[in-house]
Image 1 (cartoon, one colour):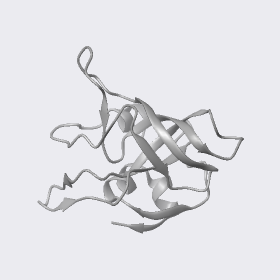
Image 2 (cartoon, rainbow, N blue to C red):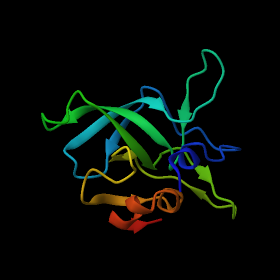
Image 3 (cartoon, one colour):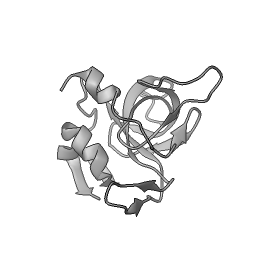
Image 4 (cartoon, rainbow, N blue to C red):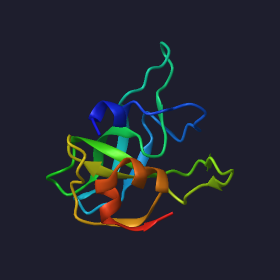
Length: 138
């Protein structure tokens, strides 16, 4: 699957879960603990509208807390959990206790070697390399 297809997925009828400047937890062991959303890949909005992102979207984050090697750096990340409830096609509503991301390389492989906590099924289907490291898929 090409990167363009992964970034520009169907965004119809999705609940805005995170926006720019949202602080998120990092769910992998890449060295980062907390990050801030600074960009959303594939967002085509309106002038002065704040971009939003949902589960399984590719975003740009700036690491705020973590090891000195990763602090103050920008990375790509995939959203695996969001607090805002979102609706699945079968009618169920899902929400998590925190907002969490997994830092990935430009080719989509995770930077860490393990993922802490559950991840959403939508993220696992869209990013199979992230799903292979997850301990629990909800």
